[in-house]
Length: 86
Image (tube, rainbow, N blue to C red; front, side, top):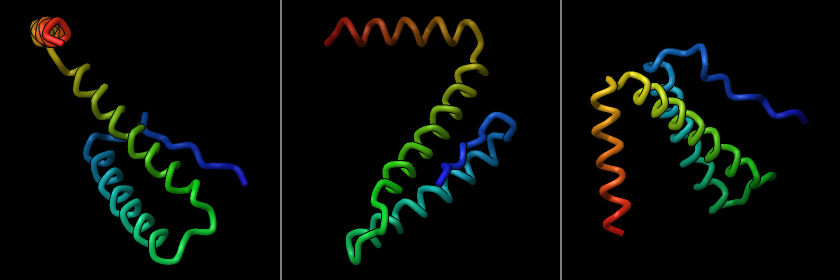
């Protein structure tokens, strides 16, 4: 059975947020079902988690691309300072 590929490129931010909320609800339900009676294919839980992470990554990339150069520079300085503190 071929897995469907998650399409995020042509969607608006609102659509992605709604899809992520739906996937998170479905993930919680899937985890509950697996704990109660077990799933036929528990690897579906992993795939669901990865799809949620893909959407979150796409949202973060879009958020960073909307930053101005000054905001990106400030972000880089903050990240460098935090890495030196560790």
